Length: 112
Length: 118
Image (cartoon, rainbow over the protein chains, first blue to last red):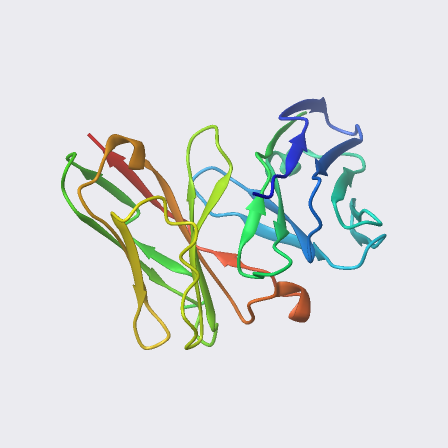
């Protein structure tokens, strides 16, 4: 069974601060996705990383996939109150692409 | 529609009753997935369908759970003889491809069906 450990579970910061969320596993994934979810809604895809060592930037968000494709990080620069939400990482199984393994999620609260 | 549509949005049922949850994927998406999200838990894979291939049912927690996809479009998840531990948000997602990395589109999720078994 593949597991993705996501940390921290909770993050409470002030607007303007930087933060990093981590996703770690002992398993190799074919790709890794990051989602953001708001209450009462389904997760919304932020990015997919595929290649080991890959770095993708989405405005103030920077995503990195580990060289061995076992871990990933999400870094947010100068957080805004609109960044508040549940962030989820999800790894795609090597042999069964349709099966995603999700981390437990990080609840981010950005205070004005 | 433009997004993945799920119905009902909320369902309260008595223990032991059967329930059906419906998912309308985005038109043209060949892959359809069901996940379950419990409070304090992450998303748990249940089943996925890809085109005419046999579905991957490896995530279904018991034989009380079943799903079908008719005409390569709409899917129904059925839970028979519901138990209190079945209470969760059931999420459906669809994508162009089984492997989102190929087209880099990822999955589009619906808003879910919140199931409460009393």
